[in-house]
Image (cartoon, rainbow, N blue to C red; front, top):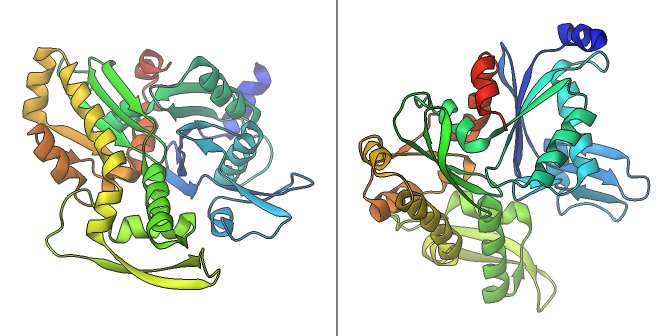
Length: 340
């Protein structure tokens, strides 16, 4: 105990948004200091970690036989325990700029639909990575705080957090989650749909990074005022040689219809199950969107049309969750009330 409190003097408290696509770290007193892809590159035979974060992401789909680039997170939860621990240790040390005497108190954000086993995996990997104390809070709650919503008031606030692996919807009142729904659909699922569509229709194989670029550049959830096109390069599966083709936004919209309708359905279900008094508040305040997946062009227009409610974006959708967790670092009483 004495050692722990001594180590605590040398370490800044951290908030970590352990995402499927990106991991963000907030340091008390400094703000968001790290935002890197959740990817680890290892040597296959020795399991030694070669690169983490941005460097490792550049290697995805480009590695020789002896090197493997792994995503330790899948659908918002830890899929590869050892790699998740190595990644967290690397990020915690990078933030502190030194190797020893680092035992920070850590808040970690997890999806609201997480099981006890998945929760234990997060807790264990963060403790193994060098945390002194760990608090686990739900992502929609952190997103609501990060978006500046008055969560402690007796009024309804609705948040939709669309990440890489999951979409979380929550109605929050009096510092608690009244209703939460989670569906394992997010940005990664959209990338996968794009890659599969191009493979089926054009016999062209493209990588993860390319499908992500297509999603950002021309994909949309709602018809665009002006059509967009993009040139795509990949490998022709019939001839076996590299090939280029041009695709348009309408085609991408049709191929993303399924994941987008899953997101719309879970928002509608949350509205159906919200108590009437809180539903009245949501009519006035609208629905707040957070998470990188919410930046898909036209998603706000589609939700507005489907729900007939005002749709607002949080100031910084990508770091909304970690900013919320960071704000709670200063309010220990609130943290104890909302941590799982």
